[in-house]
Image 1 (tube, helix red, strand yellow):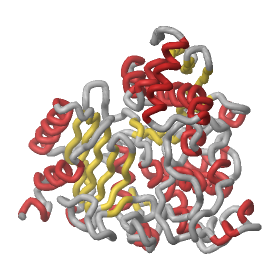
Image 2 (tube, one colour; image 1 turned 135 degrees about the vertical axis):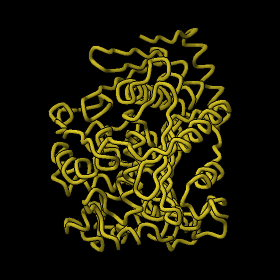
Image 3 (cartoon, one colour; image 1 turned 180 degrees about the vertical axis):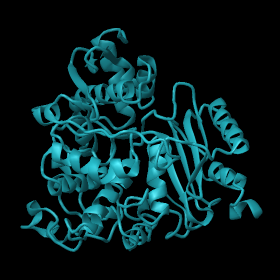
Length: 457
């Protein structure tokens, strides 16, 4: 058990006031801070400990990297029941529970749907990646270089935990930090958004979803939100007033750490821009897509899990892949997907293969083409269907990489980089609190590849 002692409520509140003062403290901030802090603490520590199998100390250290105030939490890890309880100065508590296959969810409101759900598993295969766990195509020289790069990252305090390289459909190098391995599910944060988009694309391909149908939700039928199209949600240009602000009382933090059914919050948001006109990054937008998937795959967590296993996980060979639901049973499509570096690479290879992997077509080639096409907003065009692009704006996102590169990106510098010009996928997972040299490091890795066009430049 990890217990963080505090010097008392008075001192703790002084720290909270000091932090809040730097952010323009408001009564809303103060009144909502305990619930946000305990919810965030219990949820992330639970997943770190029981999904990623980190030590209690590492899970707590990762958590504290977001704010010094989180160090004031008392965290109690119950390994027997796989739950975590967070207490903030005796003012607020929260508890998160691990469930096999489902990961961790906060105990908020009724959780019967979670308690009853079972994710069916399938056997691992011995074939080479991506069909199975084999890795007979590892390039020893490249493997050594990748290990040296990971070590150099961590000597600089960048906390890189996994690096993996795929070229020509083969896994050719992978390197891991101590305590992390080939089957360790690591948090992708917003890389989950890209997977959520792929699930939407599959519903479109199978005729379950008409991309042109409006309103997307019946709740919007009586007002101007009825004009929001599916493509607007995919492009982060819905026009909804649900900004990506992470502070106590904000919609984004309440959605992830306080609410029973997080998607209720963006569903109720007002329209502030004409749909399709303004890019505004919003996790709420993706959780609306996840709610749509939930509705169209049967309307229960069990039906959603069965659909996910049958349509995505089993055919793609995703065995170290945990997509966590909110307390109501809807997958948190914006943020809570844990997967091994090999499984994240499978997602990248699927996109590189124009929507197909292991003989299974998940989305159409035409959908992939749309997904990596710049959007038509007036302020930020270098974003496709929940994928970040290296083209569309005046300045490329990654100056050292080919223009056709695109990526799933997540907080703490998670990256699944797809480089069609080099027929390559590069995965980087870690816990970097500041900047990470994504463009430079990815370009360096590409320069090592034997058949990369960049190697000859």
